[in-house]
Length: 500
Length: 109
Image (cartoon, rainbow over all chains, first blue to last red; front, side, top):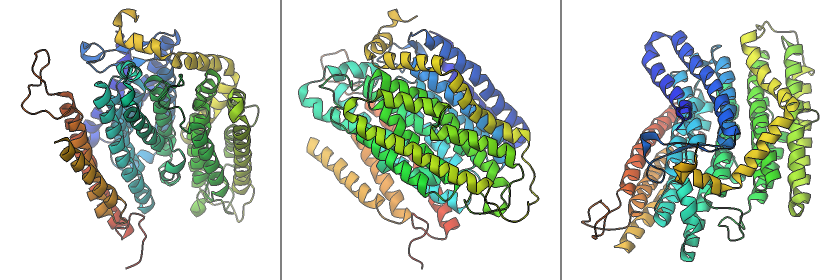
């Protein structure tokens, strides 16, 4: 049992509690505690990635209860990758927030750490009810964070988000209840065994449960009919919060990937999820994203629709349930998370220098720092639109190569049309923001390094992902192979003798 | 007994869904509460309906499953917190948007 596994939960939990105690001691100390927790989280995530990179499953049993009875944390390649992405996004969002955005409401640092606790827990847990609990932790933190800074627009978007997710939580519990009634267990590995050995008359119940879970995770991942909460929430939230929220849709996609392969076994023809329309859902989400991107009149809203677009792209890869498809999705996932987070921060920088026009795509006085922000925007736009040579292009290329011939026509058309629409929308936004100016330069302060650096590094990581495309793709491929052999996961969790 | 249990959950869910689909925040909050009651009952029933049975395995007598009761406790706590939060949020929306319509707009009074 390696105690490092519980560090991604203990660090944010401790920092959140400390910050709660320090609430009256001023922001300086809170910032310090929060920063320390996030800075330590990064090397922890890298170490965990190293552990998982060997291909072994690391099982942690809090309380030392053996697997089907106690709750377990399981680290495999997929969890380690997502933990690392979370740590990176959290670090730079926090650095940006410490420039003053954290003072726009109460208890920012407490909520920030609780959100990280929920996200890390969701990635690590090996128990379905525990997944629900971590979902609730991250949701209630995200409810409060989405209202951070207050204002009627945030309240309106927040209310929709909260009500939708409360309904989603009810459905999650019903799905969990059905699974428990049928299988008598909630440990994911044990569930996989029991579901595979389930009696034929239980197949319908299991299918209901699987589809309910798909709806719940689809709501989190902003898949088509359930994506309408996202643009308003992400466009109105405070910039570092919106950047951190870039990881939230990926939690939903992670849960789809994990449960559908592990518990419901997508490999066989007798699979419970066979005949679902995941590829069609991906195409429709992509289409909705394209329409939204083209129709956005604000930069933040445009980036929010890029998140919807990326959810569709990722689902298109995942829905192949093949090694190349999941490889493509797992390469594209860190890229899109980092780039959209960076773009949200950049959009805030741009909006601050445009006076009252903000991020609205209408003529405004020229920016104070057109060159620095322009270069960053160009980098982010090229990367997000999927133009060569940056990582967005590599991710989409991998995806297009991975598509099964049967789906190829539609997916190629929609993915390429999506890239094209993203390109048009981003170049139109760029030319309006940087070139189509009117009036004299207003007396705004130029953004200093503490604000520029987090956005620049997040966008620059896209270049790094391009340079290191080969090792990242190799890791993603190994992850996909590991994911598609759930029997190893089951053996590692249920039989402690086999784990290192 | 099973029929009564199933009917109770069904009626609660139906009323909850109906209330959630109203356009004002107060019925929506009530609907969410009804939905959560239905979910709690449903979770409780997943341990099968037995009366007077001990929650311990090992003997020959039928046993009551203690796990759903633990799950229900967790769900009740979470639902309680969430309901409190959504009530406060609705009040704030009423204050800030000047209206209790879920979209903050609706027909003008």
